[in-house]
Length: 458
Image (cartoon, rainbow, N blue to C red; front, side, top):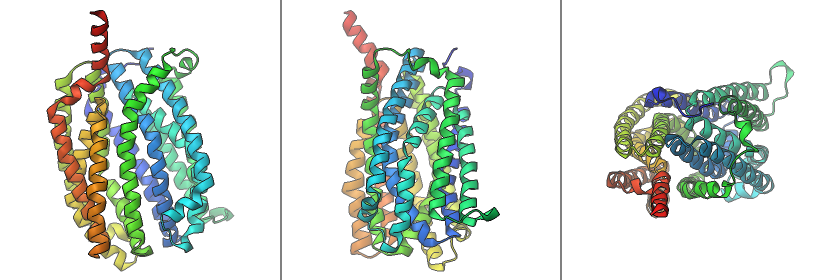
């Protein structure tokens, strides 16, 4: 079977729209949890929101293997090295399984300590711990799903991953409904029920995406027949993945600090932040989807040594993402009262949330710069520069700005949103200079492989 992506289908739209639907459904899963729980208790929303903040930090660790996999598979397929692409895929799944089991055990054992570190109010600790312990125990499922999805998308089968996400979301919604509202005499379990439906939907999702790997890529044949270069593949995964994880860990770590700042403002402010960020996720959804689609195309272009095509693809995508993300933020602000009204009837939460969405109009174009260009840099294996800039900007600038405006000047959540704006725009401008410098051409795995071969031959 020829596993190379069909060149006729290698358009940005064909690759991106299934990714868009998949990301939309992933985000809706979190929003639906929040929306359905808001009918049960605002306190439950806050406890699950903080627990998910912790889970997001550890899911990033899975992401570094999945990202490395996506880049290397795309570059190898672009270079017509199909066996190498499958070898990388096998190694990455095994690596994320091992890491996932360790993380699952850690979250189960230390869930209570982690929530206390986040300064979660005492009355919310029991529910937060209940959710984090159960979902955390099975978090390794998410790592395997992420890696399998990355393999399928980079191989051109973006619809398969989307279909799996559709099924997972439907199962999650049905499970939430049953355990929160208790139809047919089903016991009302609240937060515990949401955790159970999350875990169950991931279990079934893993079975489905595993079937897709076997059906599309004859993946079962590679488990016992991959090359002896597994250590080399793992090293390349780490070279791309670890810096990428560093950028995401820096982001999620800074988000935890900002959540701590919000928690000091009280449970109502914390709930407002959760609702506002759930809506923001929908705004930057398009930028996230188009940046992932661009990453696949740039990876294939670089594997084929079409560096000028890679450069132009990134710049065209950037223009589209900036325009769409800005328009999206304007529309959400215009309907902010109705959107927040879906979650709560608390007038102070709705009013504060509206101010945050106004600031989001300035924030989202800067975020688009980061998402598109960083994805393209990673696709070219230039992964270290984004993480260095992330650490400097998020912690040196973003956290400092948030502390000054939120804690010292007493601007509340608006101070946190101002820190988002400063951080995203600063990094976005730096990423643009990096891409235009074309330093990334010499950092691609395929370029270095060719250079090593020339050196060896001569």
